[in-house]
Image 1: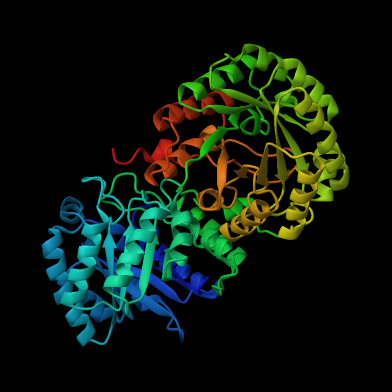
Image 2: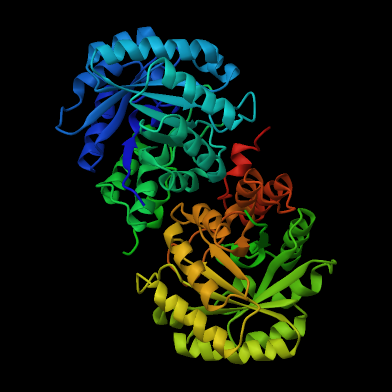
Length: 298
Length: 298
């Protein structure tokens, strides 16, 4: 098994769907704790409409508060040119642009069709590249759509092709936004994307909504993925996708990787402590299991 | 991917660790509901010391109450000759004999060393075979021990060899009793067992204590397993292993298999309804996710 980079998306995906809105200082604390635990790439904020996602309204304050640490990269999620303006003003290291694989979810999530999403991508990515940023694309709802149902692999791979041809991303993420995917889909999508864009690193983003998230993550590792998104405590969800519950949890993913002999540099005990702290701040239960089950071997 | 048989262990492993003790009529109802959902092999009871596992004390009453249905096979778990006497008297179709992979857990679970466990197996299995029963062996704590820690694969495979040489089982189950295993271990153990006993069907038994259970189950499917244990609602645990929480859940496993194109004959909606009913009867939360997340596609 190859090495893999675990990307902490808790400050963004983990918080955007919780009823409680954390103050910026707590978001900064979450990021500091994640860095202390060994995480080196962090999706810190999203630059989206504060009326639609009030949990993320203070992105600028969060980015002002985070420590600048050698080797630590902060990503900001961006859906449109206005979001990119904000991202450029705050000094994130990466932008992560979302293109949704289905029209109906794309309209509800970001007010455009898939075709318009591809055009958006090209314009945003070109500008972000000019500004010297690392630019990744996340293909949302690639394993299934809450509104359209099945999403054929060919449709997702066609999107990979069009995006790569329009403005090549520095990384392509295949995302199971609503937690419906299974390992057979992971194999098909990663193998297909690897053929279309052999030189672009692949990332995966899984939710454990139906208990397939960790199986998907470990399968992705065997099929060329170089990075996996995860959220401390397994918090998470999408405000515009019904019943899209938690991301795969950082601590549970790192446990599985540790036991599989895949180095991550992340300290599980620190992540479980952060998850308990975050649960208390959010008044929302930890979805990860490792904090309850305890380490192994003890 | 091959076909796989899903074995419902909820009436036994699912109930043995719950604080509430269900009346036999409810256990029969659970079994009837499981059959209605399409399950065809059911671990219905265990014949263990009622003082040590009071939840299972009424095994005889349960076996008297269950319907006899063509194609449905009832298994009873057995640890010793006294248990086999009871199993033979009740007319189960299968006995499932547990041999633990480590001395300390074996002593705590069934009062004998591993060597004594192998000798027990040979005596029990020979008698059960004489009585015409299907006899499986379950190698408990094969992925890790709550007391001894790491369990080397060679130790488990040596046990497979000794058991197979003493009295060949009709099926060998490799069990992650405390939910610590990862897919790399599944591959090693199943490939090793397949080499030692190429003609004996392999079964796996996983707990999702640390969120690796479904990844393990789907990996097992790619490595020659013909049957997987699961428990409706994901209830379960071992009274003699600290923090050994739920089995992988029948509904979540069947979801993953369905979406992977592996036929099971099990109706998810009926299983989620049974899980909700059981949760109510036990006053204990469903651990499975599918009932909360809902089906896909809707």
